[in-house]
Length: 403
Image 1 (cartoon, rainbow, N blue to C red):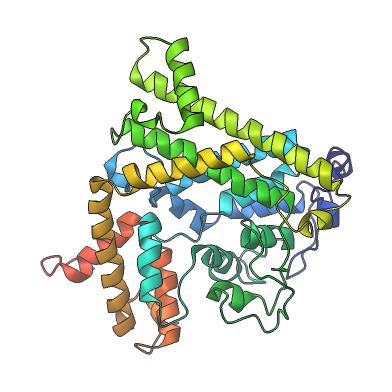
Image 2 (image 1 turned 30 degrees about the horizontal axis):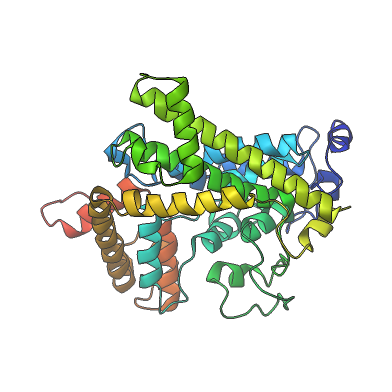
């Protein structure tokens, strides 16, 4: 353990996750002198193949729509920046907050939420598909880099945070050796080996990473939608908090170019939401007076949260974006292509697993079985948008003779 860690831990709140108190890894490893356990987790995620592939996975716009729109990778980096900054201000463990932010979208298949919806439909007879469970599966099963263990062998706190950052997954304690049938597959497959205590809340760092995600995609999807011309600033006037910030920007910078006005609005939105999280979370923490991270886990409700006004504004903004951006005809057209690509690839691979690359085919030699379907779902979920398009062209465009 690094000699600097005790000093760093002295700066953390009593209810923060401390490296010296970590529950460790499923496969024990010696600590290093230069990095804490959560710093090692972060570095393993950053160096993973799954993280690199986020570069070409859709946030809202598919990669070829433009170089300046966000991808899963740039979104994850933005979430990490927000999470780390708030963790530092609140004396939480910023390394744990950062790794949770960086890893939160790893389980997403190509083509954003459309890809996940289609893949889940394809898997309906084979226990379904859930991107959060898939992230756990990637990090504990599918990433193959080490000789001594499967996956990345991340700490218990990181895996717990990934599983429960949006809250408990079951309403009471369970026998982790026999997880309930309605849990998504990735959780049920892993829990018998490693009890993540799915009935409690996650750490404050994990809860904060989830809100950092809300802050990032609410503000940055708005940014992308405005810059793409899908809607204009004056169409946001029915969302009270956003309308107030728009008036402030227009009053402060009359006659400024549109791109400057958009940036000034987005930065104010982020600042407003961050400040609100810190005020409301501070109020809840004062009321709870937690003396350990387990007090956070057993609080019975989130301790990191937006206040009522900002929570309502986020809900309204999500509804606006769903109507004016996520269901815009240009996005719908690409979504239509994406649905066909994912469904076509899934059906072909399941019925003809010999068309899978050799290392994947070796895991799924029999067609039309649950085992093969899961292998196919893992393979497709790991695709980037452009790789999925290329695979589809190779397999369904009879004039394409490339292999």
